[in-house]
Length: 340
Length: 270
Image: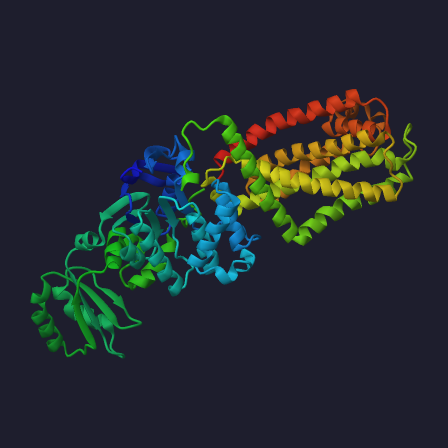
């Protein structure tokens, strides 16, 4: 095992007129967790498919577990596990049968494959469903089975494409813990996600890609620092228009405010730290407006993500971060649609 | 982990063993599926039986074929070919379905050669074909069909039907990989069968066709294979017709197998 689990240089891939990937560089050290964050259609799935040898890049090179993905795909396949965006398990087999089949295809003996399948079904909470056909599973159970399938060979490099999509909070936390244990035992993990919280929680390094390019990379702390400044968060009491608060505080704002009328929340980018608070107090007192809650805090990774991926995708700043994230599918082509 | 690291000088024999055991695993998976979708198996069996009955009763009274004592003896070998051709479209449908659901992405991310995945599909369908052919022979026997050339020739006939199914299956794999949509694959797979079937000697002797069609009908693989099957079922010289059928099948396989394997190498879910 080399110390570098994944190294990619200038990866490019076109689908007709669409540049799905446009010169992506990335590096992941063995035992690390790399989070690939990006809006729908950013190129995340294409990136994973190239690294997992399913697609050939038009440009650039990538080495996974020491082997070139284009020149030595079979060597790479022995050392990777892949959980795709849509659950690729056989609906007409049980969880155990699916896992045994995959183990046998990795070259395990019948006995080894059966032991491995039993271990994974209990590890991923599929025990009670182990004997039922996968077609009867809920979306979350299928998801977990798909993740179990990627772990059958205990691969040193794991690719997870939006692994927690469709999982309930319990399933999500259980998966995060599992990934933490795997990484602690030396497994290198690359995971794509649309959930900023997920990337922040389990990845030491995050790259943000948009329009097929890496637009930012670094630790969660570094990415937050890149947006700069602090956030002043105010809550307007019911019955009072939060836009009024934003207007009153405009003189001290260092950027466009984010206003969520439904919950009466106003988030203002500010500069100068706690020194601005007396000025805030003065402006509020002079205005006669009510404030239910007020906090000065560092920007969240989600705010950093939204700032970095640009207002063209997230709308005119009048939506909250949640709404903006949900509005992202308006971008051309979803991840699945753009990756033929 | 030891099982996952192969020696770098992995011998060719080793790889072939891997191919065979992987193909066996995939075959098992496909057979399980067949058993667990009972409606699919039911329709896959009912259709050939209907072919036997419908064609025998609908055409049996109208057509008298010189040489064969009964029309059913003349007809059934061709119906075996027809049923096999129709059944083989299922191979393409299943492949397109595996592509659409992401199973092929899963298989391609594993250290398994494409040939094993494809051969596993074809083998499962050949076993289904064996069952269906047995059923057609049984139903045929109930309405008067007999093998007239002895047990060895009868076994040869069954083997030829299966080989024909394998060739059709590889062609349909290629179609399924190309169209990547199950419904389209189902229709595309029937297209060549229907054309070849009605321009062949299955229903009527080639000599009764218009002259311009006769040359095509004689070279038609369905005619060639049906002639070989008739020789094996009814009696008469077998060497030449069987050799001609074998050449056709070998030719089809020589084109379809490498094309399908090459196509699989770059196949991804849509």
